[in-house]
Image 1 (tube, rainbow, N blue to C red):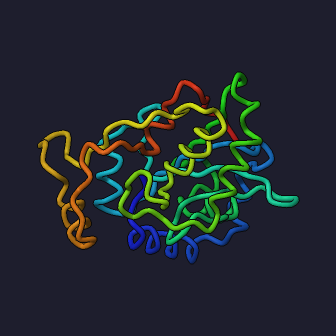
Image 2 (cartoon, one colour):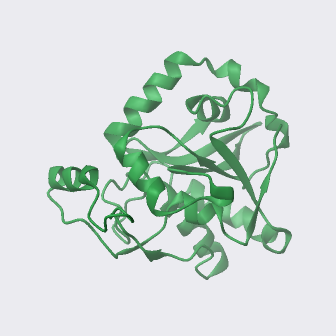
Length: 219
């Protein structure tokens, strides 16, 4: 599950101005490979906190966004559902967005395990086919729009003919109180939609814990 456009754009713009892309070169991008998955923890306020509260990421970390590394010409970039579309973003900008310019504290890098490596060329092709498609701010399946986790889900599903990363019933409720997070109530009221409680979906945290990937170091 990704977070809404208005929060995402505010955070993204802030980090772009605070960190120049060149500063992210402290991360060894040479260790990244096409098909690697990036899991990101962004501090975008109550909505990010709500996303992270319902599904724990690998090693107890919290993630509210994810993306895939792809090769574009002679460089590696990421495909992500962000803003209004599925789009390409430079690695430097992606890492600087979290402030991960010296050590990785807000981003984890996942790599598909060896038995599944043969799928990656088709996975990458499937993900690239979504570039320019609209962002899914309602987090609904099968509506020809895409949120961040859904891009990975679709790319791997089409390549493997299975639910490589299985969907689970989504929840927008606080696990402590069992009530809807107020941020989601306000968000879906603004969209004039019902909260899609229990509708199948997935978020970055659940993908990061998949037994089909391993977390690697790029430092």
